[in-house]
Image: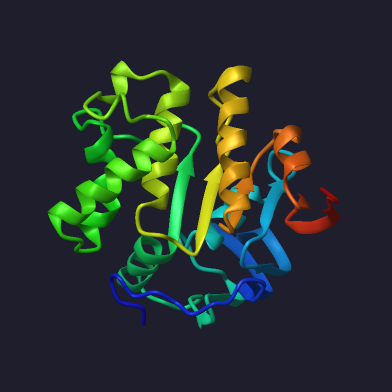
Length: 241
């Protein structure tokens, strides 16, 4: 089991995420609702993958599986070489904190905290020292262009700036995967374009990005597009960039 602060030796190009015959269903009274069916998916370190599909196709459920927010009903899920399909809640929480950086459509920043403090939160839960976490938070805020907003709280920031904070926060523990859920969904076109530029830059630096989206511009920027339909992987597309 991975511990706080532990890093994994996963070389660039090696499988970082493997789903084998994975499915998810929910029991609604006497009816079984099948949401994901027989998912086989491999993502390698350094890939930029967009997951798309119509409402009800299973995108949110697949995001929950990838993010260790839920467990599959059947099949296996290997993250960084470790099977996480049957871990308990505490173990899944540790995995999320150490291996996955989340970026949400609604930003999910804490209103009472400033930019630096919001970025520090994941490091606090991983036991990083105060001085180290503050230094890293300032570096990350600067990287996303917010060095002049360090003491500002979310209500003092634009939507695009709040999403920059969310991206910096997602990077704070140097995760295996950055998992973004509709990262441009609440932004105007200009701010959305800025966020796409940041994601492109992170991909260029070797980060592994998985983005669940309806935005065809994100799909165009990604190296692979996985399209879901009725809980199945309907098709995959490879972008030549």
